[in-house]
Length: 569
Image (cartoon, rainbow, N blue to C red):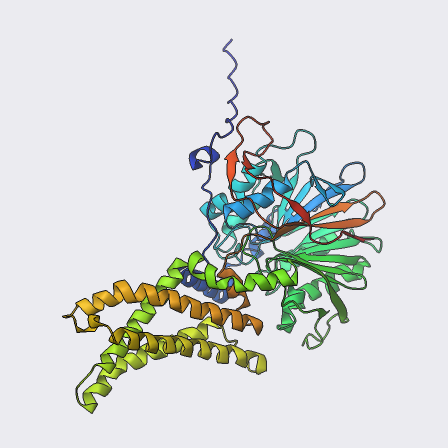
């Protein structure tokens, strides 16, 4: 009788943070204003908006299993987590993953056991979706945080909603990671969904629906059919949590049609059953904000790892569906008050002023681009200023200067992203963009005057050009970055380029996620967990139990509650 084949030995825990040992490469935060990244992301966004319907794989998902999932919890109660916008730099992403997997968190006198479910609310990878990007920015850090199922409880389950960054490859990498049947695990979590959307029955007549809006455009027919079938199990005693890719209730303040898809879903799928939608939750905006209504809470919680987005410009009150919606059969308008946010408005404002130091530090490529632009402006302006020929020749020589000045103005206006529609709000984009461009032209004129006072301009050609590139460009690049920083600070006060004001800083601190608890009495309590400062120094943990994190912070993390917990019944 041949000897039994030996089982493969378990891979040992890593002794260091070497990528060969941990199986992925820890990535730094995305430099969002890097020129090549701006170009590639812009092109991908344009292609996705132009051809997204042709690349839409949701129609094909009708051939995949349409299971409705069920989690009964433990002894009639269930703890679960919601985290979104997580696939950015390793320090922030892993800090949040590390907190998620702790056996319990003791926060402000509340004991919060580890969740049995984790819901990822969108943008699990940045800047664009690919196999390697998911491995380094999402799957790898989460596998390192929980390499094996916990020994003291059930294996947790992971569900995911795709965000716009997950969609940039047509959802290919997302489906391979979260909806595959073979090896359906990510570290110690198992994945159960087979599509880019899901319905989960929870204890005590609670339900969780995760929607895939594909850039907020519409809900496809197979998806609606799937949820209509799931909704057949709903009744007046049921309560529903809906996870969506973006906080359309906030975006509807300026774009009334942004909430149309969510309103249509609630109106046509949920409302006929008599069930109540008690909670809408989303990521996309990288902060925590809660709007409270008479019978529903609207929560944005996109603090899973991506750069911080401000809270001090949030509207104090919103109405959804918006009163100026053009949908004829919209639901009745409901008013909501801003009840909680993190970080606090004062702290958010202070972060705004950090743009002056962080912009050149976090985005050296952008500063280099500005330096190149100003070097080009110098060469054309200096050429015109030192020309000693007749009028016709001077006019001909000034044509390149006119082109460069026009290019500067056009680039500044495009940077301000003026909407195509008309109106007072949209005119501010044009005015601020033109002002930004004129400020750079003024800086270039002053820099040219100062340059012409130096003896360098009298050197034999091409030495003045070389000196301009080597000396003038880097110096004016730094000055120009401060002009752009000042523009972003002022424009942000008018809700223009507010995203760029904070994306350009890449603030990694002030992260958040939700821990939710369904009690035996049927109540749902939401605990908004905040982390003021992420971990920045890490060390391997080779001698711990198999299910413990591979990597530990050198300095313990200090989470707290972003606001007191609140309960829905």
